[in-house]
Length: 137
Image (cartoon, rainbow, N blue to C red; front, side):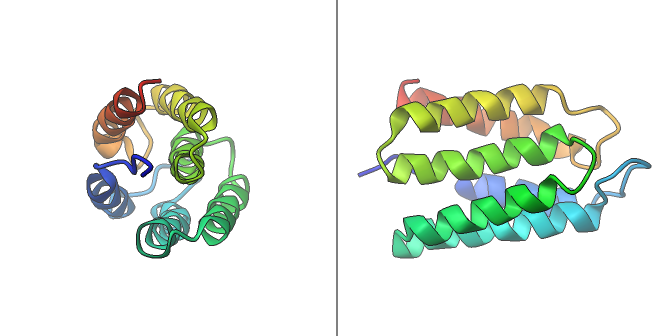
């Protein structure tokens, strides 16, 4: 059975908390983060409840497409990477899952201090690191 990130519920809580933070002067806004987050939450529901790989991947792709409408945003890129990592894990593709987690950590590290989701970033980083350890990346 694939190792679905045990911290998914922490991630969900962190993502929801990020949407309540005030928007910075630069895109994306809290509303934009919420839209991307909702697509990622939809993908998690498809993974956890239905094992629907195609549906989950489609939601990750939609989140990625939406996140690319803004100036390059490392936080959004990071949470999209985690979304794709979970899909890869469900497909038992450890290499792709680990690669996406590495990319997420790199993106999270590049998130500026002024980002609206900066306060939840530490939890995102810890969750991605725990996931890498469980997958033995």
